[in-house]
Length: 114
Length: 114
Image (cartoon, rainbow over all chains, first blue to last red; front, side, top):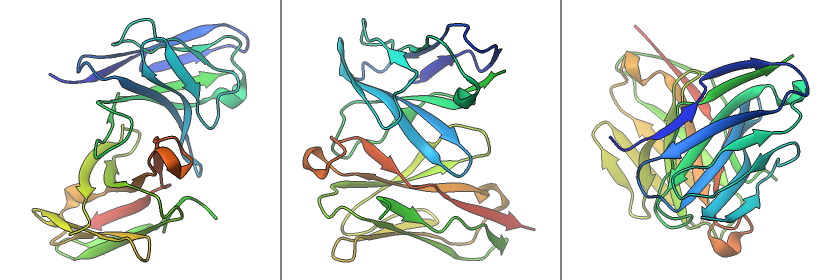
Protein backbone atom coordinates (compact mmCIF):
# COMPACT_ATOMS: atom_id res chain seq x y z
CA UNK A 1 0.00 0.00 0.00
CA UNK A 2 1.30 3.43 -0.99
CA UNK A 3 1.71 5.47 2.15
CA UNK A 4 3.60 7.96 4.26
CA UNK A 5 4.45 6.60 7.69
CA UNK A 6 5.16 8.85 10.66
CA UNK A 7 6.30 7.82 14.09
CA UNK A 8 5.47 8.26 16.84
CA UNK A 9 1.76 9.12 16.66
CA UNK A 10 1.78 10.71 20.09
CA UNK A 11 4.68 12.11 22.08
CA UNK A 12 4.92 13.96 25.37
CA UNK A 13 8.35 15.31 26.21
CA UNK A 14 10.03 17.86 28.44
CA UNK A 15 11.55 21.17 27.43
CA UNK A 16 15.05 20.82 26.05
CA UNK A 17 15.09 17.08 25.47
CA UNK A 18 16.09 16.39 21.87
CA UNK A 19 13.63 14.36 19.83
CA UNK A 20 13.21 13.05 16.32
CA UNK A 21 9.97 12.39 14.46
CA UNK A 22 10.48 9.93 11.63
CA UNK A 23 8.81 10.02 8.24
CA UNK A 24 9.09 7.41 5.53
CA UNK A 25 7.36 7.04 2.16
CA UNK A 26 7.23 4.00 -0.13
CA UNK A 27 6.18 5.75 -3.35
CA UNK A 28 9.64 6.79 -4.58
CA UNK A 29 8.55 10.42 -4.29
CA UNK A 30 11.18 13.09 -4.79
CA UNK A 31 9.44 15.79 -2.80
CA UNK A 32 8.82 15.64 0.94
CA UNK A 33 7.70 18.26 3.40
CA UNK A 34 6.90 18.85 7.06
CA UNK A 35 3.95 20.89 8.32
CA UNK A 36 2.64 21.87 11.69
CA UNK A 37 -1.03 22.55 12.32
CA UNK A 38 -2.30 24.75 15.11
CA UNK A 39 -5.86 25.91 15.85
CA UNK A 40 -6.70 29.06 13.93
CA UNK A 41 -3.40 29.04 12.04
CA UNK A 42 -3.94 26.20 9.60
CA UNK A 43 -1.13 24.20 8.07
CA UNK A 44 2.24 25.92 8.08
CA UNK A 45 5.26 24.53 6.28
CA UNK A 46 8.39 23.91 8.35
CA UNK A 47 10.90 22.45 5.88
CA UNK A 48 10.79 20.75 2.54
CA UNK A 49 13.09 18.64 0.41
CA UNK A 50 13.18 18.37 -3.36
CA UNK A 51 15.45 15.35 -3.37
CA UNK A 52 18.22 13.57 -1.49
CA UNK A 53 20.54 16.07 0.21
CA UNK A 54 18.41 19.01 -0.95
CA UNK A 55 16.41 20.71 1.81
CA UNK A 56 15.06 24.22 2.29
CA UNK A 57 13.21 26.28 4.87
CA UNK A 58 9.49 26.72 4.80
CA UNK A 59 7.51 29.40 6.61
CA UNK A 60 8.27 28.41 10.22
CA UNK A 61 11.70 26.67 10.34
CA UNK A 62 12.96 28.10 13.65
CA UNK A 63 13.71 25.43 16.20
CA UNK A 64 13.63 22.56 13.70
CA UNK A 65 16.15 20.64 11.63
CA UNK A 66 15.70 18.08 8.90
CA UNK A 67 17.86 15.75 6.85
CA UNK A 68 17.35 13.81 3.62
CA UNK A 69 20.04 11.17 3.37
CA UNK A 70 17.79 8.68 1.60
CA UNK A 71 14.95 9.30 -0.78
CA UNK A 72 12.36 7.53 1.35
CA UNK A 73 13.14 9.13 4.74
CA UNK A 74 12.77 12.71 5.94
CA UNK A 75 13.10 12.97 9.74
CA UNK A 76 12.19 16.11 11.68
CA UNK A 77 14.56 16.96 14.53
CA UNK A 78 13.83 19.20 17.47
CA UNK A 79 17.19 19.83 19.11
CA UNK A 80 15.79 21.65 22.14
CA UNK A 81 11.98 21.49 22.16
CA UNK A 82 10.02 24.29 23.78
CA UNK A 83 6.34 24.48 24.78
CA UNK A 84 5.53 26.65 21.73
CA UNK A 85 6.39 23.63 19.57
CA UNK A 86 3.43 21.75 21.00
CA UNK A 87 1.45 21.03 17.86
CA UNK A 88 0.14 18.46 15.40
CA UNK A 89 2.82 17.63 12.85
CA UNK A 90 2.32 16.16 9.39
CA UNK A 91 4.80 14.79 6.93
CA UNK A 92 3.81 14.82 3.25
CA UNK A 93 5.27 13.60 -0.02
CA UNK A 94 4.61 14.17 -3.68
CA UNK A 95 5.97 12.92 -6.99
CA UNK A 96 6.94 16.49 -7.90
CA UNK A 97 6.84 19.86 -6.17
CA UNK A 98 4.68 21.58 -8.73
CA UNK A 99 2.27 20.56 -11.38
CA UNK A 100 -1.05 18.86 -10.86
CA UNK A 101 0.16 16.63 -8.07
CA UNK A 102 -1.36 16.65 -4.67
CA UNK A 103 0.46 15.61 -1.53
CA UNK A 104 0.05 12.37 0.40
CA UNK A 105 0.13 13.00 4.11
CA UNK A 106 1.21 10.82 7.00
CA UNK A 107 -1.20 10.19 9.87
CA UNK A 108 0.30 12.92 12.01
CA UNK A 109 2.30 13.21 15.22
CA UNK A 110 0.73 14.96 18.16
CA UNK A 111 3.57 16.49 20.16
CA UNK A 112 3.23 17.99 23.62
CA UNK A 113 6.23 19.77 25.17
CA UNK A 114 5.90 20.46 28.90
CA UNK B 1 -3.82 39.99 1.91
CA UNK B 2 -3.83 36.30 2.80
CA UNK B 3 -2.74 34.00 0.01
CA UNK B 4 -5.66 31.57 0.21
CA UNK B 5 -8.83 32.66 1.98
CA UNK B 6 -11.82 30.58 2.96
CA UNK B 7 -14.90 31.16 5.07
CA UNK B 8 -14.12 29.22 8.26
CA UNK B 9 -17.76 28.28 8.84
CA UNK B 10 -19.05 26.20 10.46
CA UNK B 11 -21.63 25.31 7.88
CA UNK B 12 -24.39 23.34 9.58
CA UNK B 13 -26.65 21.66 7.05
CA UNK B 14 -29.27 18.89 7.12
CA UNK B 15 -28.71 15.60 5.35
CA UNK B 16 -29.57 15.83 1.69
CA UNK B 17 -28.79 19.52 1.43
CA UNK B 18 -26.59 21.08 -1.22
CA UNK B 19 -23.73 23.13 0.17
CA UNK B 20 -21.14 25.30 -1.57
CA UNK B 21 -17.74 26.41 -0.35
CA UNK B 22 -15.79 29.27 -1.83
CA UNK B 23 -12.14 30.13 -1.81
CA UNK B 24 -10.11 33.02 -3.18
CA UNK B 25 -6.40 33.12 -3.88
CA UNK B 26 -4.19 36.17 -4.15
CA UNK B 27 -1.56 35.19 -6.71
CA UNK B 28 -2.63 35.22 -10.33
CA UNK B 29 0.41 33.07 -11.21
CA UNK B 30 -1.13 30.12 -9.37
CA UNK B 31 -1.09 27.00 -11.48
CA UNK B 32 -2.69 24.07 -9.69
CA UNK B 33 -5.69 23.89 -7.43
CA UNK B 34 -7.05 21.27 -5.10
CA UNK B 35 -9.65 20.55 -2.46
CA UNK B 36 -8.58 18.48 0.51
CA UNK B 37 -10.76 16.98 3.21
CA UNK B 38 -9.59 16.74 6.81
CA UNK B 39 -11.43 14.84 9.51
CA UNK B 40 -10.92 15.92 13.11
CA UNK B 41 -7.32 15.31 14.21
CA UNK B 42 -6.60 13.27 11.09
CA UNK B 43 -4.38 13.97 8.12
CA UNK B 44 -5.62 15.97 5.13
CA UNK B 45 -6.64 13.79 2.21
CA UNK B 46 -6.88 14.85 -1.40
CA UNK B 47 -10.53 15.13 -2.38
CA UNK B 48 -10.11 16.37 -5.91
CA UNK B 49 -8.02 18.49 -8.19
CA UNK B 50 -9.69 21.51 -9.75
CA UNK B 51 -9.43 22.08 -13.47
CA UNK B 52 -10.16 25.19 -15.48
CA UNK B 53 -13.06 23.54 -17.25
CA UNK B 54 -14.59 22.45 -13.96
CA UNK B 55 -14.80 18.84 -12.89
CA UNK B 56 -17.15 16.51 -11.13
CA UNK B 57 -16.65 13.43 -9.00
CA UNK B 58 -19.92 11.89 -7.95
CA UNK B 59 -21.70 14.34 -5.66
CA UNK B 60 -18.78 16.76 -5.70
CA UNK B 61 -18.25 19.49 -8.28
CA UNK B 62 -15.27 21.83 -8.36
CA UNK B 63 -15.05 25.04 -10.35
CA UNK B 64 -12.18 27.42 -11.06
CA UNK B 65 -12.49 31.03 -12.18
CA UNK B 66 -9.02 32.28 -13.02
CA UNK B 67 -10.18 35.78 -13.90
CA UNK B 68 -11.69 36.25 -10.44
CA UNK B 69 -9.10 34.03 -8.70
CA UNK B 70 -11.87 32.03 -7.17
CA UNK B 71 -12.39 28.31 -6.54
CA UNK B 72 -15.57 26.60 -5.44
CA UNK B 73 -16.67 23.19 -4.21
CA UNK B 74 -20.28 22.06 -4.42
CA UNK B 75 -21.51 19.06 -2.49
CA UNK B 76 -24.90 17.71 -3.48
CA UNK B 77 -27.11 15.42 -1.40
CA UNK B 78 -24.95 15.84 1.73
CA UNK B 79 -24.30 12.75 3.83
CA UNK B 80 -23.47 12.57 7.52
CA UNK B 81 -20.08 11.23 6.46
CA UNK B 82 -19.33 14.47 4.61
CA UNK B 83 -18.85 16.21 7.97
CA UNK B 84 -15.25 17.40 7.95
CA UNK B 85 -13.10 20.44 7.29
CA UNK B 86 -12.51 21.23 3.63
CA UNK B 87 -9.20 22.83 2.71
CA UNK B 88 -8.69 24.91 -0.39
CA UNK B 89 -5.14 24.41 -1.69
CA UNK B 90 -3.18 26.28 -4.35
CA UNK B 91 0.17 25.67 -6.00
CA UNK B 92 1.54 28.99 -7.14
CA UNK B 93 4.23 27.49 -9.29
CA UNK B 94 7.89 28.33 -9.46
CA UNK B 95 7.41 32.05 -10.11
CA UNK B 96 4.52 32.53 -7.74
CA UNK B 97 6.67 33.29 -4.74
CA UNK B 98 6.11 30.07 -2.85
CA UNK B 99 8.71 28.17 -4.89
CA UNK B 100 6.12 25.69 -6.00
CA UNK B 101 5.00 24.58 -2.58
CA UNK B 102 1.32 24.05 -1.87
CA UNK B 103 -0.42 26.88 -0.01
CA UNK B 104 -3.28 25.76 2.23
CA UNK B 105 -6.32 27.74 3.24
CA UNK B 106 -7.35 27.43 6.88
CA UNK B 107 -10.36 25.35 5.96
CA UNK B 108 -14.14 25.48 6.08
CA UNK B 109 -15.85 23.27 8.62
CA UNK B 110 -18.94 21.36 7.50
CA UNK B 111 -21.32 19.64 9.86
CA UNK B 112 -24.10 17.56 8.32
CA UNK B 113 -26.96 16.82 10.73
CA UNK B 114 -29.58 14.07 10.55
